[in-house]
Each structure stands twice: as structure tokens, then as C-alpha cells.
Image 1 (cartoon, rainbow, N blue to C red):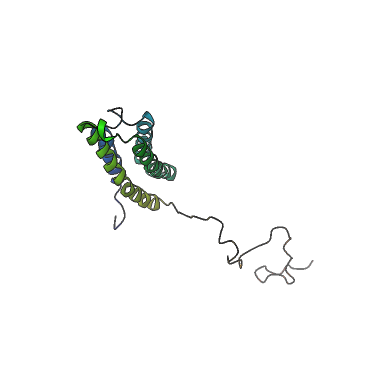
Image 2 (image 1 turned 135 degrees about the vertical axis):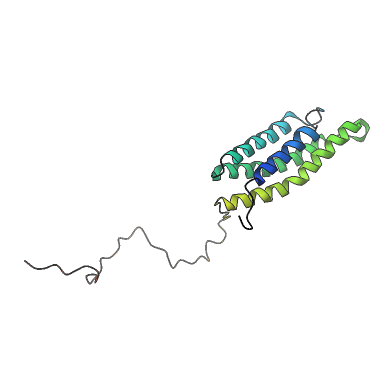
Length: 164
């Protein structure tokens, strides 16, 4: 396979995410983080399983990458809002929030690996915000509102028609 990613990389990412979320990350089990935290992460894991099953689907890997990026943002919001105060933190809650933070720190690595898989599946990232419109090369521009002028001379590729 050369330097490219192995096909089991997506399985590894989903399995590691599953282990962190279910086994170690007990944030949703301690009722410390809201239900939306669990739903968001379980949904991304389900889309990751879809990306494993549909190896040639660009949509599956795109949705998995988008979901991972969105859960990075929502995890930051959840952890920052629902972080327990020092007075009410037990060992289990500190462990849970520590694992949630560790899982959050590993998500950018997962995003990078999923992005590489996206590129290997034929995805092309083109980010155009429209700011570079004035300086584009327009040498291949063809106006569609004006009909093309017919050639003045017959083309040399056609054989001459015999006259009758």
C-alpha cells in the first residue's frame, strides 16, 4: 500500500473513540454532562461505523470528519459549561472530566487521520471564500451569451465532397 493509510485506520479511530467514550469517559454516566454530549458522540461513532462499512463512499468519510470537527466544538462547550466546582468534585467526577478532556485532546489527531483517509478516497478540499475573484486567470473563459462564430474556412479534417 505504500505510504498511504491502511484501511484499518478508520476502525482504529472508531474503536479508540468508543473505548474513551464508553469505558473511560463516564461523563454521561455520572450525570455530569448533559444528554446532548452522549448523543453527539454516539452519533459520530455511528457515522464512523458507516465510514468503515462503506469504504468507497466519500459521503460517509466526509460526514465522519464533519461530525468529529463538530464534536470538538461541542465538547469544549459542554466541558466548559458543566465543569464541576471544586466543592462538589468527587474522585469519580474528576476522573470522568479528565477522560473527557483527554478524549477531546485526541480528537484533532483523529480528525487529521480521517482527513488523510478522505484524501485517499478521492476527496478534494477546496476552500473558496470568494475573495480572490478579481485576480483570477480568465484565459479559458468562454462567454455563453454570445453564439460562437462559424469558421471562415472549411476544416482540413473533413474530406472534400465530390460535386454532382
